[in-house]
Image (cartoon, rainbow, N blue to C red):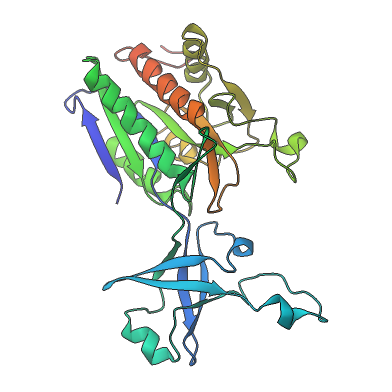
Length: 312
């Protein structure tokens, strides 16, 4: 399912700009005789936000609507409050038997997504589900659009990559990195805005929507490529923030960096609030500045550029 757009496909030196395309979701796991549906995670889906959410069940016959049911507060009074968990959240699609559910095309393994859609908040934030990482796909597509509109000629092949299965282990990036065999990879994904309650800046860092793209420091991030990103940001007055990762970035950067004997890779992150909910928030200016940073960096990379600190 990974999609790739290529500029200069015959060039030997290959630069990748990449974002992942997949969305967290649910799998149908068990259908009761009364027509209720229990689920398991497909990626990092948050069980605590599920109750009362509307969903789309994706069958071979089309979308079936359903809701995550939850007992009314009146029926829970006087008892110990039980929080949402995979053991007690369930879907109700209006059926009264397992046979009726199956007649709609729903079976074990059918994928379920939330139906919440896009909106703009205070003319400042984009809000919606799966901005992790639809925003990334949009941003790399905008880089390609700018290159064409501004009639830029690149001295290398540029691979604009939208990878699948990041949310369950970076698998799409692993596959496409092996297929393309790039010389350089610049990955964009989201990272946490840490300004809201219940987030510890000591462990998560001090990052905020509206302050610009986030440049990461991590074992998978090649130091000289990272220095290039920072130099480009400074030269073009693009605001940026810094983030440190301990062992891994948790993004497709890790997959590209350790592929094909090692690929110089770097990560440009978009600050985001409320990750893996249906109200993910990103700042308009951050989106524009990530696009600018990737675009200007691509224009700075030279043909056959060697990012190694020591080379023969």
